[in-house]
Image 1 (cartoon, one colour):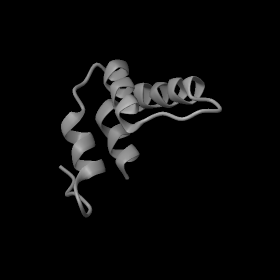
Image 2: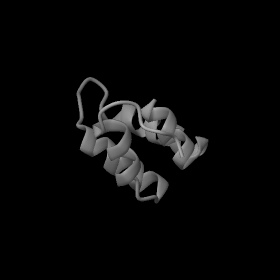
Image 3: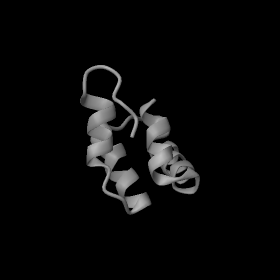
Image 4: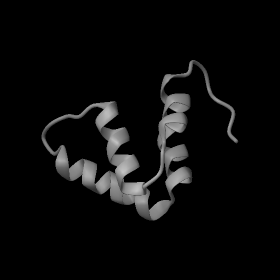
Length: 65
């Protein structure tokens, strides 16, 4: 659900660009959540700390805005 909320927040174009860049850059390896968050913010030009904190680190299922 976190990825779906990210997609809603940044839009389809940026969301799929984030996924392509991430998959290409981490092929055969791994990355951290923090690295993914930085990539998402850099690609979308949006501050995503609140969204990612809510959907990744808050216990239970958050309410959708």
